[in-house]
Image (cartoon, rainbow, N blue to C red; front, side, top):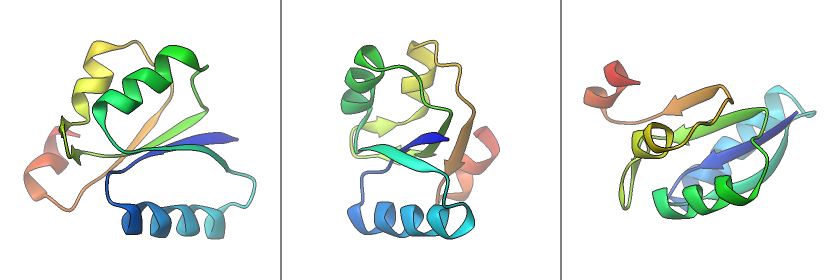
Length: 89
């Protein structure tokens, strides 16, 4: 299974990747993206992964903007440390 991480904080991305590998070694993280813009560029030039792990609050806005502006068929698991975004996710 191919997955991507969308996370703007490097230590958080590292922790999440280690946790994912601990749960399922078959999941291959094919990209770690750190912003809305880098994510949009990546999705416009690559096939959609099997799964997306995405932080909600990124340095350039909310990751919802990625998925509202592009048709991406992959399931998304949102991560956040902000209570107010958990309901919207």
